[in-house]
Length: 315
Image (cartoon, rainbow, N blue to C red; front, top):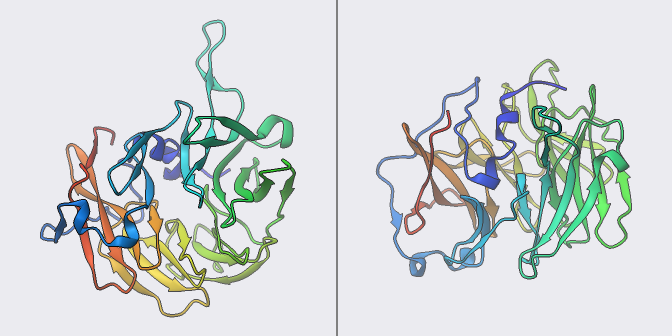
């Protein structure tokens, strides 16, 4: 499995935001002069019930906060019913003075209201030859979870039915090139990061059908590891990060344009009918990130000032 800077992001959303940077592009600072949303009353109405992982918790933009479970790691997604989250759990085990190591990987579903936890997938039971499972994401109807599976020389996507526990491997017919969290549209289409047409280290954002069959490239960025994509609620567009900026593209590959002058590596934290929420790098030593709201047509970009930035000393 390929070594890359993304490994440093394994715990990124459980603890906050990492200072990991790409070797292919320099981090982009947020503009110093940008309009600030100082009160929740000034937030666009469509964003009020938007919930994102932020600084070790699930934060709703109306200001309410729910703590994450202790074992939450990796990329965390909330269900469309706003009650469940799904994440990867990789608890460390130390025996007889050994260096702590990961004994098994799990895909977990956690109820934010009841605090009940369900293990949807246990890697050693379901994928005994795999080396990691990661990046779960709910389907739009919350009936199943799609997730990434990694082997020594291969990467693939699988889905697990939330009710029955049945697991189905998609057998994606194009090489995946990232730990990237897949996203699913209402018609079952999938957006994921896969190997570009030029092969080598070049990766692109790809559209797949519900069975994992390649449909088309959505980007032609000509550098490795574009950021993750998320569908708009109607499934017609994908919002994604590229070179630390935020873009939107129609699912047929047309109408691409920039909607935010900055973005963290992992791209949009949430996408609504009209806006995307992203984190932007705002300072160094310490590294700090703040939340921003970007209108999908590119005509509104504001910092969410009533939510404190997240700062880390990690480099």
